[in-house]
Image (cartoon, rainbow, N blue to C red; front, side):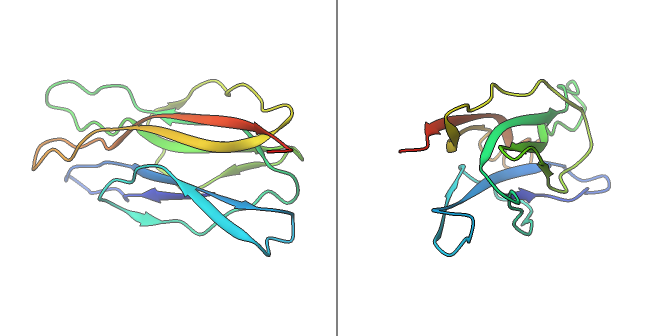
Amino acid sequence: MMQKVESKQHGGDDTALNGIRLICSQDESRSFLYYIESHTGYFGEWSHPQYCPSGVLTSFQIRVEPHRGMLGDDTAVNNIKFRCSSNPMLEAAGMDWGEYGFWSENCTNGGICGIETKMEDYQWGLDDSTLNDVRLFCCDKHQ
């Protein structure tokens, strides 16, 4: 997985997590790769890829900062963690604002294979938050 994250803007408009990319391969050799990606916001840089040491991504957890009010700087989703079927956890260097919610349901017969995101449109100079919610979908191994 990879994340597109805007670093702290030090008084400017922070958006934090702007995109998620899931890297897929046929086997653990990573010799055949392709990726699926959420709609991606305008800001930030892509992280280096992280892979499960073995197995596939099976569940996730997002870090969300609550609404900051009329004069606050909203960021919404700041980071995401993934759990691998071999049990390690992957977390990229997103921002640390807000709290992690509950883990998603576990993909029991396969792994995560689809992504849907809720994105705020560019606000043209107003407060941008970009990525606001994430849904990930499971596929059976035979798919």
